[in-house]
Image 1 (tube, rainbow, N blue to C red):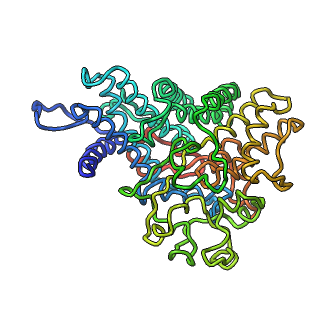
Image 2 (spheres, rainbow, N blue to C red; image 1 turned 90 degrees about the vertical axis):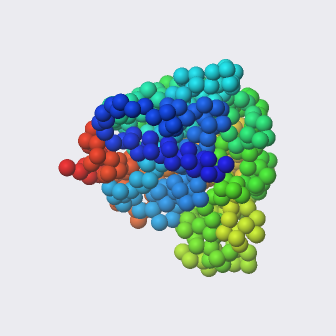
Image 3 (cartoon, helix red, strand yellow; image 1 turned 45 degrees about the horizontal axis):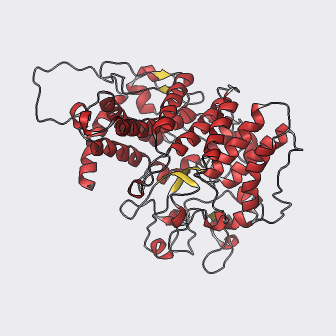
Length: 485
């Protein structure tokens, strides 16, 4: 199975390499009958599903992209060692990984549109496959448009050989994302059978779409009509009754909860396909830890004292020694250290990294509901949604340092409180950076030492220099970065 997927990945990588290079080809008279290419490969459901697996592996495998990608997001206010001094080559591998994933997905979508499966699958089965493909494509474009702004919109209808690859306006990218996710909400199953666990569900599609809408409501599009759409989509997930919070804060990231009820969709790891070794999160006094990633000292020490802090941050090692004795003297990250001690000692981890959790849905609903009716106080429903999370964080205890919210708050105060709960609850899940840029609070949230490095240009990452050189239609670069001659 591994060898077959590797062959598929190599084939699709060849297509991906062509995507951003403006190449002209001549027609050949010969038509080889024994050559397998994108036009004739997808002859079964399993072959189409292999493209989905390959697309996810572009984004998450032991040392790739989001499996070891926290360094690229260290310029939020949570991670240690971010200083907002972004150069022209910053995080180019994320651009490549997303477009390679899209290059895996588009041929599968094209094959489904051509009905290559014919009588081999029912219409419902074909729609379900298409829903998975469009869900994954939407997720890739959602991250691309948030990180880079205007980006090339390459779909199953794009002629990457004869066509001209250019950057499309953000509104066009979001239109495709919305269309793809709406299709997914209609055709993905509510739940998957056990052998297909980990695939995106209908609820995951609704949750991601709620996040898309709330992003469209905020910067840079600032189309506030999308707040109501975000509220309604998040409410649909809540009303479905399939997902819920894990009651005990100490159990949220335990392996037995990797696929529910709170974890709606994740970057998945397994014994056959590990995530990056846990040593990246561990101090040197635990399993020979490397301590690659940890919290910023100011952020970590300002985290309110509550049960959630002990569940999500590593404050003591196995010997009971405080983080104040470790290198950097800053709290480390505990969220991704719930695998067994035996695995940690073997430099292995099978722990998933969540992409969307039910806690996120509650916070999306509360923010959107509050902002959809400007000028008023938060509704009881919005307050109740956030307080579910705060109550769990405090293990049901009254905590003046993290108090419950009320309907007596102003719209602005409630909004700030919701964003702060996102900061605390979703820390180190690749969410904080996106919240900082869509709310335009990146500079004010930085510690004083880094604020002089922050300006409006930091809200976008640079288009890779190689792509700008190969394809002049991608120029100019994003503001603040070099455009090659």
